[in-house]
Length: 248
Image (cartoon, rainbow, N blue to C red; front, side, top):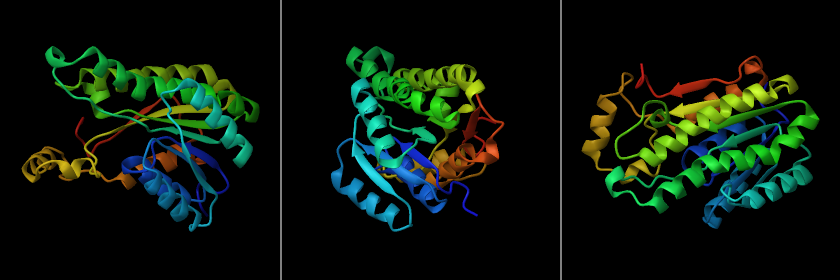
């Protein structure tokens, strides 16, 4: 049996990397997938076709989760097209790394807006639908950096730590309506973005991880499947570190 059979999911920032991996695994598990992308129309169209070929309903939406009105509109369109929203995965995120001494106010604000405000926007956008249904699973993508901090990433760490506090609060607010809110904190996940790093850097990162490898998007996606499915029906307000033991 497929674990997400017939469930409808929204995944933000899914045209590449972790978001794409989640969309692919969700479709394999029977979920219908509405996903957002910011600019890569070609990648989004390709992904849409790939998901549909797995026998589920799928649609890509050009939508900016950091914009409140666009998020509201997206949720309305998804409900109209799919009928319900059972799962929300807030995955959209960016980095603009620099030491605090050199970080501009603009770079701080932008990262917080895209990474943290988007979680507020999208959660608020789907809340009414989930309350009506009296069920829902919200999964927010933080980072090990949000749990332990990292030099040169004050903006990113603040945004990702904020997601954890926000998610715990939502778990408390919406638990009585059977709406669950959990966080995944990925460690070093190898995606298109990490391919740009030099091999020595990547080797040293792998060596420092107890499992001696970087994670894959499907490592994150499999945990999303668990948190989105009825298998985790008694789990809310939790942060799961998926990091090969980095924070052990």
